Length: 397
Image (cartoon, helix red, strand yellow):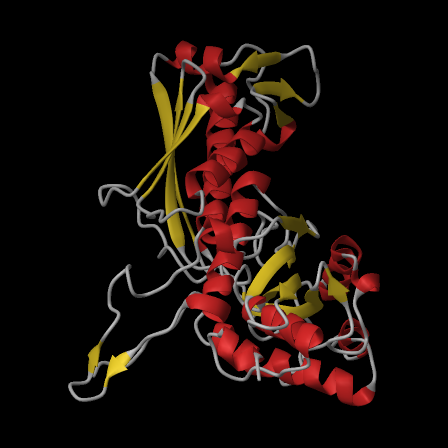
């Protein structure tokens, strides 16, 4: 029989279930609100290395989500609150995953028609890498987003990072920013060479402002990059840049954080569980593209619902074979399993990890969701679940 492998968020996804369940259990033993217990024990430095974090806004996540979920309605005595005849409970759990930045190369092609093409061999399995890179290129070059295109997934393009590990956006985004800086430098040098009024200036004496090269000594001297490239007789200019991984390991610890809140109903007779409301709050640095970041968080939450409530590998021990190795018998969450969700972001840049200000988001979207659901079940029923997925028979009798 082959060895099982990880879910999204290798290690922390399963380990967090044990840790956050234990914290919840401790809160009841001490008679302390589970959120308050976490706030009281918030670590200002990493408990093992004693190093500071590049950034940490876990407190903000806890406070933002507490208000959004309506935590003040949570019963302090498990099994004491009912809504429409259903046992009602609230749960919370924290998610954490490593954040970092790897090595990457990107290429930029700035055309005389005012368009920018960015290229990298990085793949994309759905998180919206292209959208994020277009946003970064647009901001850096002062261009409209519809004039920027990001091309990816071709091995003829410059080497890109692996898609995974919550590091793609920061890694390739850093290279894209370096490319944009390189394009600006090339334009300044071109202006000095052929631009009227720029001769004799140094590159640092020329400003790049929303597509225009402007003399810092005389602002009346300016030229748009499209006109400058046309004057050069070239259809475009190209720049490739490589960036290395962030070198802060001896000075800082880098993590992204999340807090997941759940409100649910449990039928007092059948044990059937109905999720009513979920709130996920992320400390993922600067949010480059809120729409795709929200989609990441929703997708992770649905994956966490599967981990907690539906997904289970069944084995025929006579032959060491999986019984349910198909999408008919292996139950993944469907639309009916996913409740209304609110996704919130602290949205504070982490400039130590990457000049993009972003931190990874893919894994913290899932890490912590399963224990938040299980903790809410305890709050609703007084029954502590220690094995996933939870099934109705574990909650009755």
